Length: 195
Picture 1: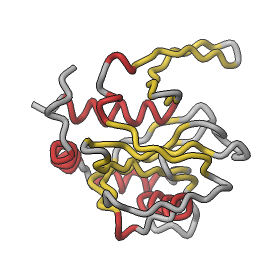
Picture 2 (picture 1 turned 90 degrees about the vertical axis):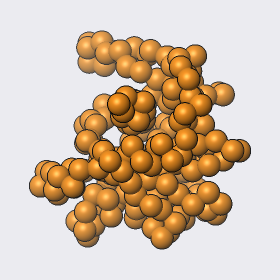
Picture 3 (picture 1 turned 120 degrees about the vertical axis):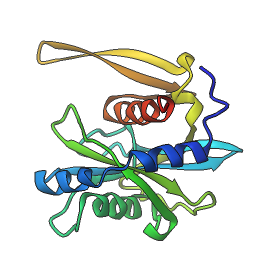
Picture 4 (picture 1 turned 90 degrees about the horizontal axis):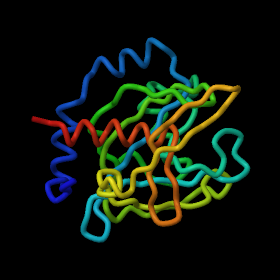
């Protein structure tokens, strides 16, 4: 697939136009348990997505590749506020260094969480301070990885006698799967299928 037209400007324009204020209202009305920040930037001259590897000691999804974020607290004003708070806690990124473009429909995780993603851009030269107790590794993955068919995989999960196939992505020695793969696949689908 041709990724030459997949610029940071196209990502921003398309995702901003996708923004629906009702998403936040629906989120507030349904008391979702988790929210994440899907953050884009320019690294090495191309659009990238910031991802974290969750620390091995985490209760849910330990060792998995994810977006910064987590459980929504009662003190959070909104799911977006939770995503921004968790991003600061996990990576030390202040909300003033993030421009949120849109909220998107939630995805369900295999562990029963409903995750509300918020896409936006983080300052390209942001200084990261990963919280070692929550984050084992941080990487900027080129957006082209999520568009190129060569990076796509199908994995099969068998849980409680039920078989489920899902999309996954390979990047270097990393496999992005589950809710994170679903969120990025939904996002890329929005951007690539604009008329």
